[in-house]
Length: 616
Ligand code: ADP
Image (cartoon, rainbow, N blue to C red):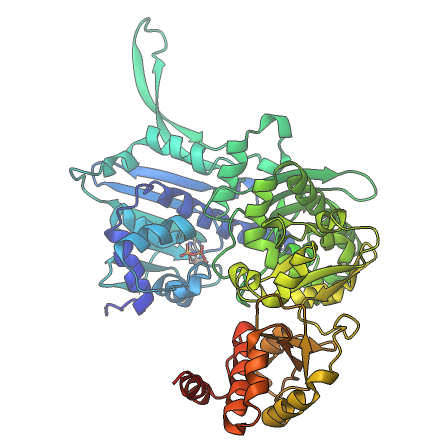
């Protein structure tokens, strides 16, 4: 029988597992049990849906067993099982497992992070075992067996197994000076691990446990017998009473479900009884999953119908803007046999989704009000999502989202809400100013920003591409309109241009069509030039649009503004007799204005030469 090689990534991951220095090796058990439970969810759902399958609820369980002498630990489930092809696909390549993707070259340290972050499921068995066998049977398929001693490969062979389900056998590593592996053969330790990590698994996790009891009829004598025991409490956490549960329970469940790898920021355990009823357990993660802002991320909550999982990720339950929320919904008003297509139209589901949206919003409002630091942490991770939510809904989510936004305030040098901005405004002020750029430091140095701040008005610093798009969609806030500090407002530049006519004409001729206008102003304090945009499209938006793959993006209408009280204007005026020099000065000023905006001069070499020629 030919040994097969793991796919390259899986092999690297496996090697990391085998040599893992990760201190939480015990989580391997949680991973195997969660897989078993997922597999039972599938077979249970299948049995419920098919009227011609008769079954007993007791048929669905997980069993742990130990053979201390042979150093074997088995995890058996009566789940869906796998066919030979599925074994290959699921356990031969980790990339297929859906919960894992490599980002950079691995090293020991990163290995620790990966295990901590992703759990990585099945392969974590190799943290404690040097041989793993998976004997499995899927309904209607031949039984088969997967076997591996680690990174050098695996075999898949036909096997004997009568019942549907999976039996995973680990040969536990020998103890080392640093590591006590034998603990995973100790039934007391295993019981404790199940209670700690897998208590809410809703199928019984059984094990034969040693029990000492008095011998009947023989006073004072005891005997040790094996007793079958259910190790977990089995009541799904969301069906328990809130006051029976501790924060740790909620956190453990979060880990058990692999919703995230760090403690969640918030959990919401809520329900409604009435016209429709449901219970929901929702989590706001404290960190965004690595793929959150990519198309690989799938939002959604698990959907249960009276305790039976009918869908792992139901996207309809969450609005996109709160797509980061993890958790589940259990409702007796959702039919067990509902199909994905019908679900999308389902009125109850829509009502539940609306309700959940409100709960999340309320939780975020509370966080913002009562725990500013916590909210800012949340916003650092998911603020961009809220802004996208506003933009992508074309303002439909305005009331939901506008008060959840934070922007850096130039005046106060901290994050503020739009409400906080307007509270600081004078009654007669009608405009909320913002400036765009790649960093707070860079925006702070922009002449346009400085001049508005100098007037005592605040400026919101937009450092993300989506910011300005979101604000445009918002249109106004509390009756105030938004204005980019770089936007040309003809009413504001009151300086008479006539004395500069000759100079401006020359400059326009020099720059050709690169700018739509050139003006002179007295509002740039110490700075020589800046660039402003006229009309709807700002320079920042031009930058974003130019990165879109379609090409042919529209350009902002640019106006070059020169500072009337800057010496450079005198120098330029005096140089008009030397056309070459004057043209070089104009080109340099224009290039500088571009640089300030974070744009690249069209001809950087020409710019460098111009500067040197002027200096020498
Ligand atoms: P994940 O569970 O995150 O997808 P794993 O590496 O733990 O990743 O498992 C890979 C896949 O193998 C699972 O998605 C599932 O399809 C399959 N699998 C694992 N364990 C079992 C099991 N006990 N019964 C049936 N299928 C299983």
